Length: 131
Image (cartoon, rainbow, N blue to C red; front, side, top):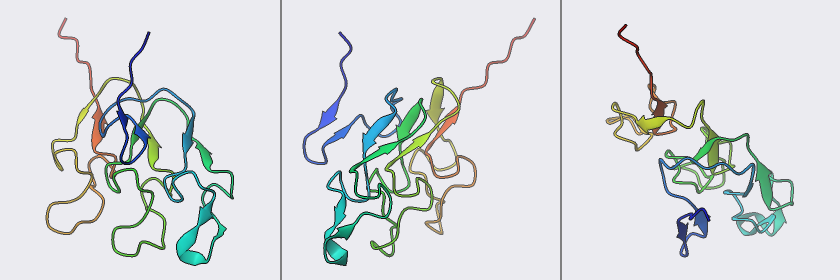
């Protein structure tokens, strides 16, 4: 049996920097409701009212928006890193925290997405064979 961490407050499977292997997730922008209440209960522009989004595995929770799917400055806009999904695809399951942003997904001084990890907060581990 494989255990997954589940945050009851935000109802997210996993934590920042943890590899997730599912392909269907609750939409981060509308939190799985399919509707955006700030726009008068209109259909969510990210999941198109479905409440779920599909992301290729392996994936991680978006470090830049903390899986919320919303832009930091204007909460009516989707996150520029995950496009509102709340999760982003990574290249491999072998990952490590980004050393430039320390896993936050943000540049230190500006608050913009980290240029090294592209806002994901993690980087693929590189294997070097010294033979």
